[in-house]
Image (cartoon, rainbow, N blue to C red):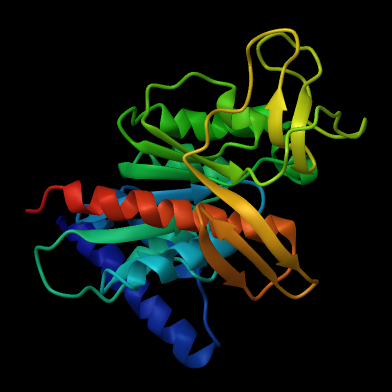
Amino acid sequence: MTLKSSLAIATAKSAHWFLHTFRNGGTSLPGKIALSLDPGILQVLAKDYEVVVITGTNGKTLTTALTVKALKAKYNHILTNPSGSNMKQGIVGAFITDQKIGKSKKRLAVLETDEANVPIICEHLEPKAFVLTNLFRDQMDRYGEIYTTYEKILKGIRKYPKATIIANGDAPIFNSVDLPNPKLYYGFDYQADQAQDAPANTDGLLCPKCQHILRYQSLTYSNLGKYFCPHCNFKRPTLDIKVDALLKQTPQSSTFKIDGHQVNLHIGGTYNIYNALAAYASDVSLTLMVRLWPRP
């Protein structure tokens, strides 16, 4: 570690102590200070960690929290950014304040990451996996169209063709670009097939291969579901992990099955079932991956 890096880390830690002692906390400022002193500090901080990036328009925070909770049942220490400070300075701050356990052991970092910051942080660390939740136009004021936003994410993914992609298979956009990466798709598959159209004002309904309107054999909400194009062979990929039964839904909770295993989620909304499904898929995939990662 260089003198510049050591100074950046020490100063940022002092700022974190001051903010949390006298100013009721602060999540991104310590990271911002560290970056101002050493723009390459993230690479230094992340060198002993195996990194997982969780990104998408909605559901990042809950998916990250559920993924970390599941993995903590197997691993005694996981770095994350629970405050939702998901831009570069917030991620640097999470590394700065991590209480490392032991020495010379590979550590796991599960990071909620703003979509536009995926390529930025990928300049400084090497993700082993990318978890993709969804892309909707409710962030248009920040990043433009969903395809523009996805291209930002792809810019980071393309740097690491061996990283596993854990993606929402019900979202057509995540199946729209051919990538060499190993992939795991999750989604809903509990309804009988019945050809149908999505509502006319739904976003993202054009087939990315031939630009005709997609149709569906089942719909969950918005443009998510078992889609297919009647004009070409584009369709939803085979799901690796799926909700195969929806037993009960209330405004406050949901009960469903993932690959036959019953899950009781104490929060309402179909979108939160997707978040739990993403976390379950991440837990399954990452548990296997961590066993295969080399140890120093």
